[in-house]
Amino acid sequence: MTGVAITGIGCITPYGTGADALWAGVSAGTSAVTEIDRFDASSYLCSAAGQSPFDADEHLAPRLVKRTDRFTHMALVAVRHALTDAGVAVGREVAGDRTGIMVGNVLGGWEFAERELRKLWVEGPRAVSPYQATAWFPAAPQGNVCIDQGIRGPARTFVADRASGAYALAAGAESLLRGQADVVIAGGVEAPLSPYGWLCVETSGLMVKPRGGQQPADLYRPYDGGHNGTVFGEGAVFLVLERVEDAARRGARVHGELAGWGRSTDGYMPYYTVEPTGQVLGRAMRTAMDMAGVDPGDVGAVFGHGSAIPVEDVTEAYAVEEVFGTGSVPVTAPKAAFGHLMGAAAPADVVIALRGMAAGLVPPTPNVRRAAPGVDLDLVTGEGRTVEGWDSTLVVSRGLGGVNAGLLVRRGHDDGGSTR
Amino acid sequence: MNTRAEVLEVLVRLGFPPAGLTDGERLTDLGIDSTEMVEIVVALERRFGFRLRAGAEEDLDTIGDLVACVEQQVPQLTTGA
Image (cartoon, rainbow over all chains, first blue to last red; front, side, top):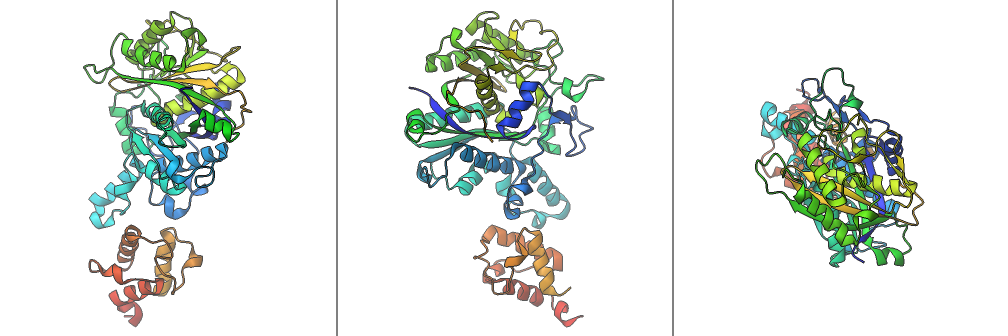
């Protein structure tokens, strides 16, 4: 057995808190992309996003909220929910020394940082919160989760652009298989909705360039002829991972398995684009499937990266075609309904895949009217697609410059479906 | 408002529940570490308009010490000047 069991899920997404809300939204194709009301985004390229209704003050003590950024708030609560869902308390079911945490994040905590840096320039250094130094950096959620949960095992944060969360999941699984921990919480978080954070997203060149008359829900169009960039969102998604035999021994409910993973890097210039044939991405996909002992014909659906950036969509389609053959596997990118969650994107796709396999329904890719030239995929659109005997899903995740990851997710057979 | 009430108001604004803020309460028992102490001292400085000598906060052990420190730094608060 090469994979690990997924025994807990914690989600904060633009649909709200919990995997039920996420699944209800994507399976119905309901859009959670709206105009940004967190700050005045009217002068940005794109003023729409997947905003989460999450309110830190409802969940966390004021002295914790004041010294941490929103991305830490969301991570803390999502991890708490994941552990509750798994029926695991660190220090009870597993020792702190044998518990690990792996986090994917791209931007860090800019909402906190830019507020304090404004004070630095306007009022001087004495006015800056002493917590600024520890609140903003990408590893802040990791450290705060360790403190909150008493975790004293392996802890790492992965910054690999939009593939960060996939890298965290793979590292979490490897940590278990190497015996470094008995429980690993792995996932990702992103809170890009602050004036400077959003500017970073804009200048990355990845943000959608809206065309006149488009509504927020229509902007994110993966694989569609009108694809023109990504709509981003905020959220935190964490999974509790355990070795399969450990989960069985303690009688845990198993949502599914992370059965294989593969990573590759394009190493291609110019760095802001990707290797044009999709072959290097295809290798990451194939590695994940080989590790799980799964043939292309066994994969019931591919959850694509689906950034709606033309060069990424087309090369991803080439990679899927090379690995699976033309039009031979259903492909979907449900993230277009709520926004690309960057560090949390791949973990969110894993959760949607688990729920989809349990329900036998591949959720739709919104906004596909006619596939873009070069995209010859069996795209799942409209109301989604019922699939019999769907046991394995390939989740594809990519970052800037061709940081590629494939995750092979296998369905659980005792999953009642209800998670927080 | 007297100095003590104003000091407590600053602490409440920094997230402390009012119930635990008695004069004899030790700052370490409230879980206040050196970083939070910096935040508290700066908040008091800005509220009352003084500047504490670097390192002087190390002598402050209780809530009552915080109030006394402010009164010492800003004598007109107690003299009514």
